[in-house]
Amino acid sequence: MNINDQIVCKITGIQPYGVFVTYEDYTGLIHISELSDQFVPSIEDMLSVGDDIEVVVLEVDEDHKRLKLSYKRANPIHPKIQKMVRIKIGFHSLAKALPHWIEKTKK
Image 1 (cartoon, helix red, strand yellow):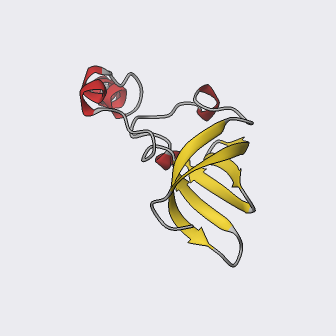
Image 2: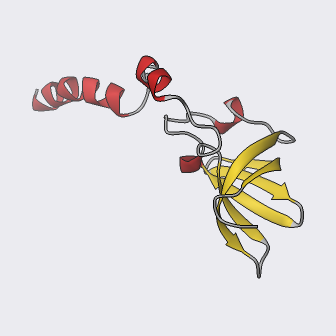
């Protein structure tokens, strides 16, 4: 197995920080930052335990049979679609609320 290989693995667990998977005799982790370029409010809304998913290999630890993987590199969102999708949570909503918070704090 090499870096940048695309593989299909099975989801074995989901945590708030990422997804655990198996591939042959390897275990792997997809960190939440490697799931999507967009904000991910809930991993469970995207993926489920038992799903087979396509990922890209970022790192291989042969000694411990561990993989670091990326879902977003194997399943990119087309740039035109990214521009059309408005981010409802995250920095944009904070930036919009910030002036109100500043005025409230001043009072």
